[in-house]
Length: 375
Image (cartoon, rainbow, N blue to C red; front, side, top):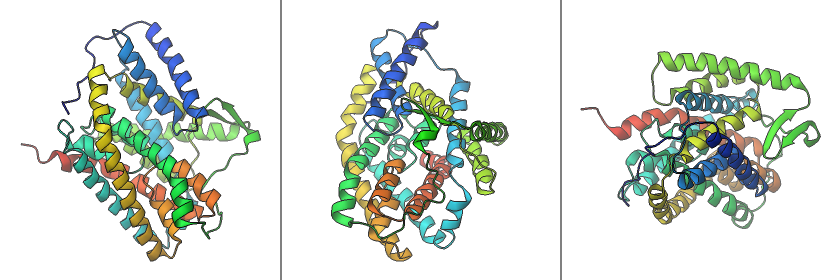
């Protein structure tokens, strides 16, 4: 495969391109939401940016601070998932869970190296395209880490789609019903009657208290996190440090969810950043990679399932629990399957969140190892 061509050289100016992109983002996000697909705001905006980039003679360019803001919002949202309930569930099995997360990281790296054997795919692009879990976070920081975020976004989404299509069937036919309880501490379940929905975007509960608390925690995480990112310069610091601040707040009982509408804004900015960088040549190059990517993804899923069986044996959980806990991506689909199949939801969530943190915290170090020593 030839090198994926880089960005457009000409840039559009004025409000009209942004208005068109706003409408396209809304339309594609609604379509993905109606289809029940994950992260509609992220991948809807990516599709909008891609379509615009292929049709328009000139494309606009997002200001640099907008991507920094989007990464920080996403980092804070991920950090907020680490609450006391999850930590309580992790006490007994923290070592096998950590080892399973590191093993998944190793499997992902091996799969990425296999993908990078394709001419024109760099090691960084191959590895971050195959990182198991945290697709939106990986897409957000992949360009900062030296990878082609267009390839990473397409392959990550392909992995999530394959998992969503195959996981319920595998869970039912191979692993059977679970014996775990439907304990859900650490998982927030919203009453549909108390949530305002605008298409795929959840605005929040009717009570303004949680929204204001979420805004306060988000603002604190962004201010402190971005200040740390400016002081301690590491790759993807705009995501890593706000995530760490939000995680500390959540783990100590002071956390609150980042408002979903704000998450949607962050997702949309990231998706547009990636989509607008496509050209016809780069799209052809990415599509040519998909057959090999599909085979590599299937191998990754099978290896992760085997790892789940081992984890289940070590921790005394059912094989279904182990399989769902180590499924490489599609968190909300995994949780829905866990609830519907009677799996131990708390265990599944614990492992999934632990892996998400391990993957994102290790990403900058992994990027440096891939790049090798400076000469």
